[in-house]
Image (cartoon, rainbow, N blue to C red; front, top):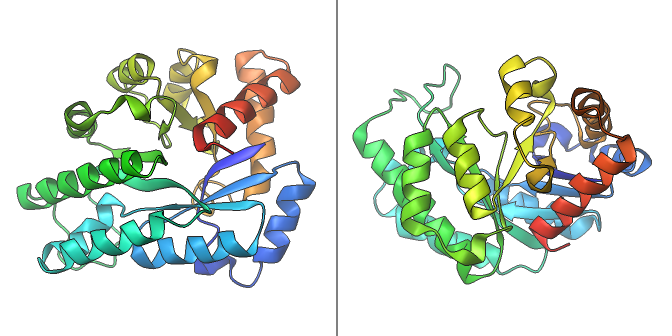
Length: 262
């Protein structure tokens, strides 16, 4: 199996990372994607990927962290330039997570966090630039959307490239029909995590997703604790979808390998 979205490079794993990777292998999770959210965590994702054969990196600027750049105009080109250098690393298989986010976070490191027009426009700029990076370097694209479906689809429609077909994924996809329509039309994978075990709306949404577009993730340490928990998610989904466990494992694993060219 492939955990398509983790943050195994984050500090919370620093003292236990060897064990977490070992736990994953024991559970049959043979490949793990460490996803960056800013330059620092993207650099760490590459570092961790270079250490462990099972780990691969995605590098990107999360829309939430665009807020920290907004007050520093000179940092925009610097951030994008440094990101492009990271994308060239052979263990980097994707760009992201990138996208749009209008959620008002109650816990954030940014003082006076506010969803303003200026902030949304800068999110769009960073999203567009990262889409172009994925296309330029033939990497997968990991798309984050939170409470910003129309803005996310606006940027995707404007910048879509056929090279992104079967090379993009809606990470922790919100249960929105417009996202599903776009995914089916453009062959974008749709990813689910452990929150589906208690989110009834997502459960109904999943039943409408073609299996050829389904991939799985833990988003650890946020939704699940670590990549090995992907096995429990698969077990739940086999019951929900009334599918054979081995069949569903093969489908989601092959989809993931195709997505990241692994």
